[in-house]
Amino acid sequence: MKVSVSGPPGVGKSTLGKYLAENHGLRSQDLDHLVESQAGRTVEEIFQNDGELVFREFEADTLENLDANTDVLTLGGGALTTTITRRAARKRGLVMGLEAPIETIQKRLETSDNERPLLAKPNALVTLLSERKDSYASVDISLDAVEPMERLARRVIDAATSTHMVHARVGERESRVLIGRNIPLAVRGAVLHGQPTRTIAAVTDANVPRDFIEQILEPIREHLEVHEIITPGGEETKSWAFLGSALESAIEKGCGRQSTVVSIGGGATCDFGGLLAALLGRGAGLVMVPTTVVSQVDASVGGKTAINMSQGRNLVGAFYPATDVIVDTNALESLPREEYISGLAEVMKIGIISDPELFEAVRKNPTLSPTIVAKAIAHKAAVVAADPFENGDRKLLNLGHTLGHALESASKFQMKHGDAVALGTAAIARLSAAKGWTSEAVRDQIISGLSEVGLPVQAPKQLLNDCKQFIGQDKKSDRQHVDLIIVQKLGKTAVMRLQLNSIVDELIHFGGLK
Image (cartoon, rainbow, N blue to C red):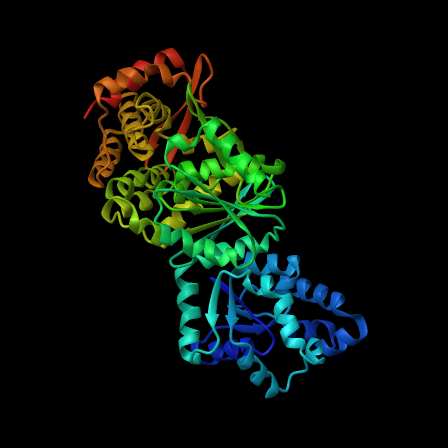
């Protein structure tokens, strides 16, 4: 993971960069020095002769063309004040901010030999820190610059090695997905990067522990007003009535297109929050904070947002990707065991589609690390980027969902999504073997893998009978055909367009076998 270090002039960015290079073997560069090398003039000369705007243009261009081998880049004190430079720093990796009391910064400035063109006037530091408050907070991780240098360096290295970043593109829009532990401040950074000027709409899941939600919202409240919309979580969240009342309350509290929607919760809350953002002012900013396994590896990445109708699940919605997705795996620790296990179905599904090693890794150790979650997200992101609007291979991500969604609908959404996907996947594995599309060994490997982590593989007979009517109403079906995802081997699946009336009974039959 590449790291950029931000903070006020004199806070110690360059000192930290040099220490990391000299004591930990990292390649460190200073953005101001790179600008001077490119321009052939000092920073002070550029400011005096051309002004700050020209300097910022030099700064952004230098960052955009930075050597890819640079591990740590120390930014100038005002680098994050411009959108283009901030975007470039965020794209290359983690952005860390150094913080220190103003008295500490002032003392360090007094002993520094560097020229500071913006700090020449009396009380200039106080003014600068006030004006740049939001910019300095638009980082992923904040560090205490007063800490001993070795401890500070270790924190930088630990964060860089334990945090992952995936860029998930949907058409012309790209989501920056950050995966790690203890990264709630990254949500504030993502919100401030979008520069909202109206009230923030926070869509939160009632099932998420309050202290986790407050770790996210409290830092945002220091900069912006926040209107919270608490959802019940689960599929009952995704209704026309609740969506309408949420939009009414958000608009009443001053939310609009210039807002950012922060959606914190499980898959249903992410779906709901995404659609609310798409509709609010015809498109507000969107930051996702998924808190369940399903939402972290699936619902928050790819841009699908939806609500349910009486005829079935996710029948009304929009493609509206988040600008940022912050995946903090600490959120998984508070999940009930059955909820956690249910979510593993989506991870194993991705393994069946794209990565046999991922499938086996989860089978052997169902405790999800940030690395495993990042791997699953990267696979999904690659599929979505190649087929953003589900006209081709993105349909593969629906493995197990044709029967799974029908089971959810028949259960009146009492069945967990992951359990339904597991049952649907097991049915497809059996069907694929019976049709000769895959081997019995692959069928057994899939079913035993799902079963070993605690997922169901045999659906109740009555529920199977009740779900018949919903199979043809799935959004992947028309009145006569269904795009069924079949298994050929681990890591290879295919879309088969089949007659609806020829496949319904077979799905029901194979869904009920052991």
